[in-house]
Length: 160
View 1: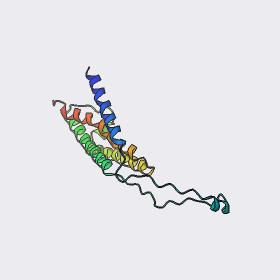
View 2: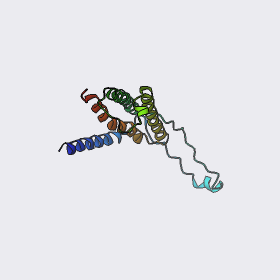
View 3: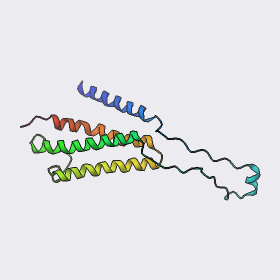
View 4: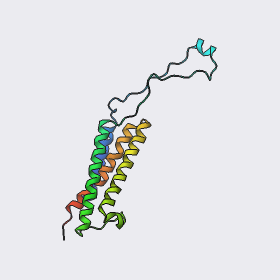
């Protein structure tokens, strides 16, 4: 019963996020189509000589919504490092994924979380350059949804 309820909640969050992400980004518009050559000018030029020109250049930017998602993801990553280290020091938890060299050393744990977040930022920029701004919003959102339960669990574990 609890697992089905949790699954239904996660599915509704994902569907809500997808519906939100289908909205066009602020300032996002398609570039105008290049005009087709007229028959008289096309006849006088060889086929390789015609190159359509774009009136303005597309400059990829990360919109405000994506920055909010990235900031939330960074905050959750910081809380994850702090809560994991605190839970390990109190003897309440055992790290399942990270090696002990990283998990029991706070600077290494913070560096790991920072590198992970930097990878997210790189993925968002990569997708933004290829005009996938809606898909770029999903990267930090999914990371936040995945990491938040672990942070909540680490903070709510009973002490010794």
